[in-house]
Length: 146
Image (cartoon, rainbow, N blue to C red):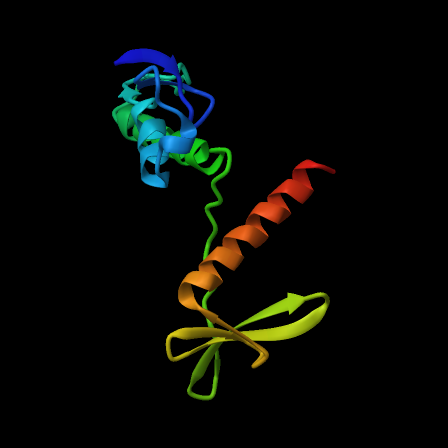
């Protein structure tokens, strides 16, 4: 193993010289980020410094600050979207996820092994995930290009 620029984020990580982002799984990329951010009492291994104070709770505060720092780094990994999934709305005994599409209200719900958008679009679960990922990627690209 040689020290090289981490392909998963902007930090230094430990990877083989032929390791590329395209060869890494999502799990590998997140693990590489965590590996590059080891807790060291008053600082992270990437150089991020934690506020130090002389008190009995300083280590607990530093560990909490480090955990937030690592979470921020994971959220900033290029090409990865971490989103909070909304809770479904209940309509009678059914659950649906309301969304605006083109300014029009739509209902997304499960029907058997499919995901249905207002009765008109039926997707298998893997297709729904692929569509959601493509929509997130396009939205991310649109925001960065403004």
